[in-house]
Image (cartoon, rainbow, N blue to C red; front, side, top):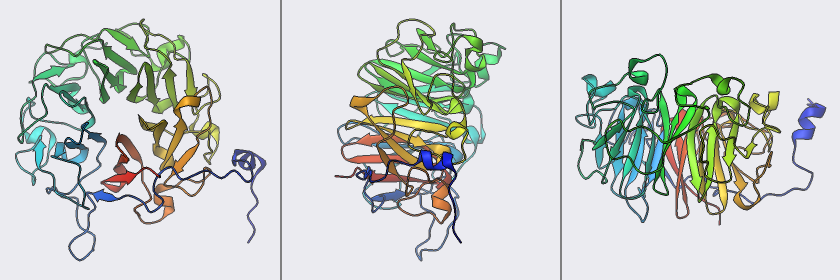
Length: 397
């Protein structure tokens, strides 16, 4: 049977003869963590154990060969490997959020505390301070030094007045500079703290690392003030507003926000210094006004995105977890601009392909709804959320 492609679909294809080098090792991930198989290679459960994962939504390498962190979101715990794992299904060394590796439940089935978690997602560290977005407790937890033992309590909390509270916007109908609502992303960079305050449709910025519980943010992006949470900033301009900001990446003075609800990445070419500063350009849409999945097409292409949740800048590329297309794409950092086409692809055969695990069983080179990325050296960590696993995948030589 011959399948004819529509004219629109053909226009989405890269030019004939366009050969792109692989972005990641074509053999697939070097290490797979959380893969639910038993000793005989048969499917196993996702029940909590030292090596299992359930819908992980955050990954983070500490610099200089330090610990590796995974937000094991569905088990409501933070998993810590003292160094980057080098074997499949390696068990974690430490955890935070549960009394042991075999327990699960929101806030360890108890009350909110300095070492409990409820749907942890984003993780970031500069090698000393580590921050975790404790999304459904509507707060960010900060440790001033990297945890050295299980359930080491956090030193600082943002979004709440104390460690015992966990209500969106502290129970108020409107946000403030010191409240959070479903905060999914967190980034420590250049002495600043960035938080994707997703439920409030904004990104908050602390110009220096906070020093006290509940400290107010200094700057807001996505809204024109600290007390508004309107969808896309309610007419303030498509270069200003956000719908579902999920993560923030920083490269020198460039700020990149994965605006998943608008199916795009917002880019500021310099550090904003005013609330509601418009972004410089977007990736994934042809203009600031575009917001459709795959630009209103069923198939993706090398310019479109579908609910991108995670980004990381590394080795001259902007890596993007194009979540709902179940693929990873890369953009050249030195040639970014409005509507820039992706130059790299992984987990799908071509730019016009999509589908969880390419519509097959999970493989070492496939993903299902990847949510987050981190990079160190030659390795890209992928929170392969829909497959309940994390991939450590080498960047192609």
